[in-house]
Structure formats: structure tokens, C-alpha cells
Image (tube, rainbow, N blue to C red; front, side, top):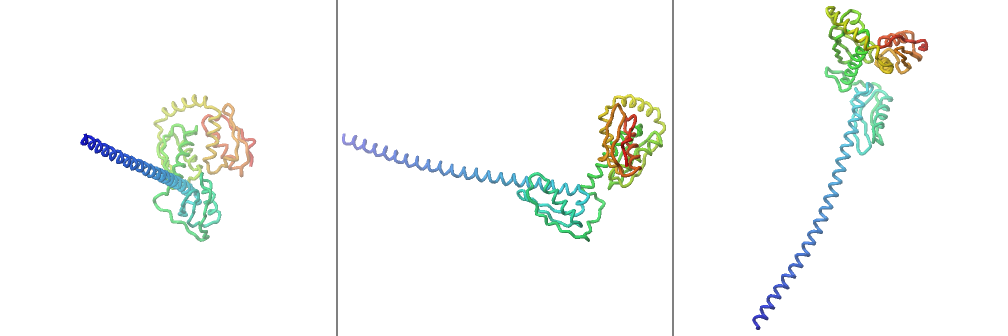
Length: 301
């Protein structure tokens, strides 16, 4: 009996000991969970801060690229080797230009970028500043200029009703246009060159178009088909192409001319600087496919 009591007491003490140990372990586990929770919260907060930092860095880089690209495309700024740094909505500009107007232009471009709230314009103005000499490798801006010229020339040739039968490749480098391909007549060849020369940004035209009279029958057939199709050219299409032709042309102030079309008859209104500019505007309008007549009595100079 004593042995049983002893054993019972021993078992009780063991049970009590196990219980106390369990309580201790439970407390330690709770502390562990609490500590782990705190660590996880801190990690989450740190992760959020890191993500925010990365997001801001991406925004800064995007804004820097947008400003620099606009500088590269501007003929007034591209040669000045300007540098841009953006930090949380503040753009810092450095470099050298030859005129105060160019410095102001650089600032206004930066302020025009979405998210830029402040500009620290450290650009230096030196009237005797000489931009870097042009190299054989075109700059980003020059590549874009040449691509724009090529697209404009191709579009004008495509819209023209006087360049049917023309199979032409247009290549532009530093504003110098090269025309390659074939034409069915000397008149079409000369017309293509004239359209290219009167395109904004063109410095010179090297006309290498060959005359291939053997394709005359094919050309006549194509013209007949296009004449039939021309009857269905919409007035809105004609108006748009005439406006674009003026816009692409270097010797016509297209923004000063109002264009409207009714049943293929084009009306031009506005005031230009000279009789030569007026005559060229009328000629360019007449050249667009689908145009039947051009009324320019209200186009003055």
C-alpha cells in the first residue's frame, strides 16, 4: 500500500513535472510565434519599402529616357550632349548650349514630362560653343529624321496620281534622298524627284530611277484600274491627303491653308507669303489621287 502510494506520488510528481514542462514549452512556443510574427512584419515592411524604391527607380529611369529622347529628336538640342538626371520628380539638367533660348527649351521639355515637378537647370550658355562634328554614324535623332523623310516621300509618291507605274525604293541618309527603281516615262521620273525635293527635311535628291517603256501596257492597265477606283475615293480621304502633302512639304505653310473637298473638288483657303508658294500649293493639291479640280480663289498672298 505504501509502495502504491509512493508510486502514485511518484507518478503524480512526474505528471506535475511533465505538466510544468509543457507549460514552459508552451510559453516558449508562444514567445517564438510572437517573435516570428514581429520578424515577418518587419520583413514585410522592408519588402514594401524595397518595392517602393524599385518602383521609384523605374519611374526615374523612364522620365530620364523620355526627356533625353526628346532632346535627341530636337534639331536645336541634339548636338549639345545634354545630360539628364531625375530623382523623385526633380530633373537636373547639365551640359552646354550656345543660346539662352535653347536652355529654356530644354527646361520646358523636361517640365512637359508627366511627373516632373521641378527642374534644376544647370545648363551653361556659351555663345562661342561649337557642337561636336558630325560623324559617319548617324545619331538617334538623325536616324528618326531620315526615317520620317523616307516615309513622307513614299507616302507622297503613293498618293500622287502622276506617278502611276512607278516602282521606287526610297533611301535617306543625313537628309539626302536616293530614289531607285523604274518609271514608265520621263515625266513620272521627274515628278517623283520634284515630290521628293519639296519634302520637309530633304537636303538633296539623287534620282536613280530608270525609265522602262516595256512596261507601258502593264502601266496603262494599272492606270485604268486605278482611275475606276479613284471614282470611289472619299472626299475625307482626299482632304486628309492634301493636308498631309502640305504638312510634309518644305515650301508650303500647310498650317495656314484650310482644305475642304466636295465630290472630288478641292477648295483651298488661307493666306500665304508669296505667289510661288500659292502656285506650289495648288500644284500639290492637284497632284493628289482623286482630285478633280482645285478652287483656290480664296487662297491669297
